[in-house]
Image 1 (cartoon, rainbow, N blue to C red):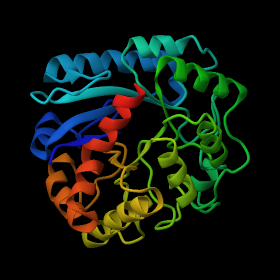
Image 2 (cartoon, helix red, strand yellow; image 1 turned 180 degrees about the vertical axis):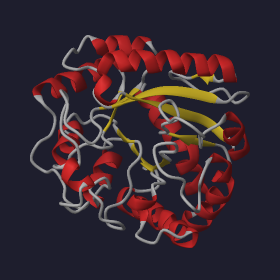
Image 3 (cartoon, rainbow, N blue to C red; image 1 turned 30 degrees about the vertical axis):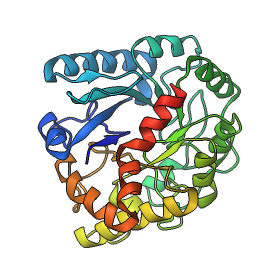
Image 4 (cartoon, helix red, strand yellow; image 1 turned 60 degrees about the vertical axis):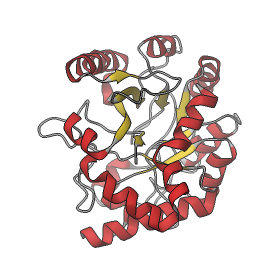
Length: 302
């Protein structure tokens, strides 16, 4: 079963990669999204990573995807953005679009010019002073963030609310156009602030978007064993479908941004997972989650 993965961090990972061309081919990947995670580097960091993406595509023979229908005779690659690449300058959206970006996230785990993240105190979380379930509910998009979302609609660029606060989520949803949570799970199964509530999943579905299932073990279950992670992945998938319907589930692995999941450590293990997903939610729903839901969003929104 061919699949689309909405998020990986291979562009910024150093050392041994989870995502390689050989593993993508072995896993049956149709389209892999590669995130330009800009961190504190802003637009200059984005430009460096966009150059790296172009070089990777040329070196590996990836077909660069910016809309339409992915090639079936090639492994497709799409450049996305994670974090604040704009740094207060809306004109940079046009530059991102010109480099092939069609999906843009607003924040990572710290605030920026566009808005605020899931965690109200990320430093406190890392130090163990605040629980991972504590959610940022009050601060959302900034005034500049609202301006950026409006311009993204004009460009036909998809917003990504992963890492965004609850208020940022509702602010983006208020535009009533398709948006994505490229790598987010179900808070009803595991109570991390990075996961979406049932109401949020339903809101993504109501706007015609998708939620990409994240393979990060911490976001899935306290049980870190392979068996526990397998069960959790399927429970999160079923919960997302229950909250938003079978048209909302997608894949957003977060490979190379997370430690290897003991059940699903790299893309070559995807066939086994998709077979088990079909057993859990049905063959047609699994095909939708693997690729068809994302293809629908791309066809309608880009």
